[in-house]
Length: 411
Ligand code: LLP
Image (cartoon, rainbow, N blue to C red):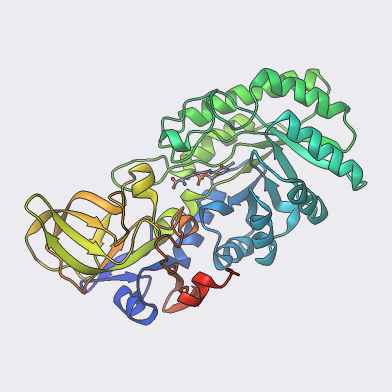
């Protein structure tokens, strides 16, 4: 469910007509809906009946307005860099609700997180464990840690976003983890408090989650035998959304299944959802610059490109594209492409679309997650603006970059 709907033949973001936003703020433009963000967070967070913390995955959409909105609703944050820690703190998120994942945390990032007093580090290698321990001892403190376990479960998703298979760079296999927990138990400067896993993104069934959870629960029992008592179980993120015709489970179904397994334990569940909160809470609005017909193809050339939304180019992802003001017109099979000098620069290929004209607006749906955050200035294109709509009001959440911004850091 989201709040991008057609009213009187015009696409609206909540109560605001999208053409009005496009005219005011220009295109390409990311538009987010506050009501949708709220609804998604509430639906997710209320789905778990066991003690839990919902730590929104900052990487999915790290705009400060989004972070502070979710923070004000009680969300913790899952971060993967010092930059994300900075953003989360700037958005006013309590540091004792922050978990820190990622395979390559640098010394200064570890120090920053220890100084901030985050809830825990999700540790991804033995080398990192030793490093965190050494830095914490040096600072005269103790780092709470989980080890990220690689349960070797196939999430049945795009290979680039599958992270829990044996050959993946993420986490530690079960046997190595066991040895690492023993090392952590005896190491000064670290306190093992949790088990973590994240098996992948855009999962459309709950089976892989349940398989991973089952393995973790068994693993936890082995840890208890070693005298390592775990308080937190972090199941990561990964719940999928509908881009096209996927039918992912509702958070309610996921929450009920997971809560059942944890019922009666003394564990606090941690979740790191990203896409399921923000994905369908955002659209990318673009304007048709030209239409171009060649003997073999119809092209709709728009002012958004792979630098604005890279998912189609990078993963072959589907984003629904529709007219902002639909009209009765013959349908054509088209490629929707951007102005960048690469054949891989497209938002859609072989897509049925009414015969649109130069100057009109189109919307790419489900663009709230991994949209703006993955954008770049490739081809010296200033990054798009981001707008947050709430009811009748729109707030500029990030201004469009200027040409001066393009060169501002160059010496
Ligand atoms: N936790 C960890 C440790 C993660 O690595 C991720 C995502 C999440 C949580 C959040 O996953 P989500 O709930 O959003 O699925 N750029 C790709 C997605 C990459 C996901 C990376 N990790 C895309 O556009 O599909």
